[in-house]
Image (tube, rainbow over all chains, first blue to last red; front, side):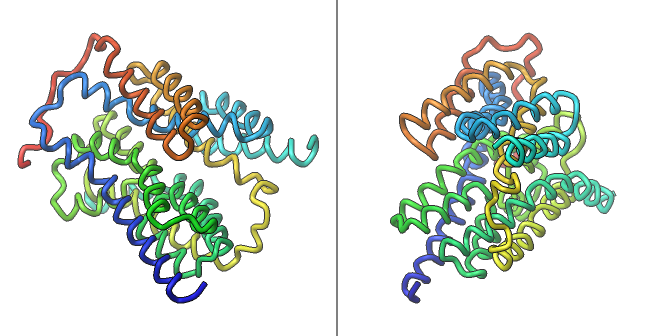
Amino acid sequence: MDSAQHMQLIYVILAAALATFFTRIGGYVMITRLKRIPPRMEVALSAVPAAVLSTLVAPAFLSGGWDGALAMLVALVVGLRFSSLWMLFAGWLVVMAVRHTVM
Amino acid sequence: MTKDDFWQGVRGGFPVMLSASPFGALFGALAVDNGFSVYDAMLMSATVYAGASQMVGIELFGNNIQPWLIVLSIFAVNFRHILYSASIARHIRHFSGLQKFFGFFLLVDPQYAETEKRAERGEPISFAWYLGFAMIIYLPWQMMTLLGAIFGQMIGDPRAIGLDVLLPIYFMGLVLGFRRRDNWLPVVAVSSVVSVAAMHVVGSPWHVSIGAIAGILLAACLPLPAGARPSVNVEQEA
């Protein structure tokens, strides 16, 4: 990578940082222009975390291979009763067991 | 009091730090593998501070994609933060301007999820707590990026040590944490199905925003729950 390319990379990183900061403050800037939150918007905002995080989980479940999917299913069952660290541990255990024995 | 809040935040963020650390190291290693210097990787972790989008960024850079498209992709992956900052405004209206600036800069997924959960339990969102929770994630993220970049070759194949399943399982745990909210199951079902469909039709990373907006629209259109709270004032000084 020559120095012109390297400068370009620095600019890309800084532009990405600025774009990311806009996403982190943008919703706040928009919503503070409203004086009140209507009830429908309130329920919509309550749905945000589950909605967004589901889009990070579902595609991974389908495209991560059957070993990854099995690990996620086991972690899901564990997660109904235990904390997320136990979920991570259980899922990791399953995927390691499968990859180093069956596959 | 303030000091207690700070350390309570640090303790609360500790498990998040543990689960995020492998990804920080993985990012550092993959960044160097894609032509970044150790300093470039650290600059990105320090200024962008959004793991999934950082991974997307180095992947695209390594494939010589045009700069504007790299920035746009990172913006798209992080677009969900717009929803977070809108949703979190109710809980941090007492922060000063500078505190809001740092608060939003540090607004990563677990920071948002924990702040919402804490507010739901009726506990105050003090800046000291918020900062404590953020710092125990932010500072190790920088350190793990550095370590990962330096010892990149030692990680080898992330699949062989099962690193690839940790991120989706972590996100799944966050989803489960919200299962007592109204409309949880329909929202999760719709967002999941739409995101998968969008990934095939429109492609990554837009499936994240499209799937999320589908679930949120559904929640807005479903009948209001019986005990719906009355509308509240958001921002007195705005």
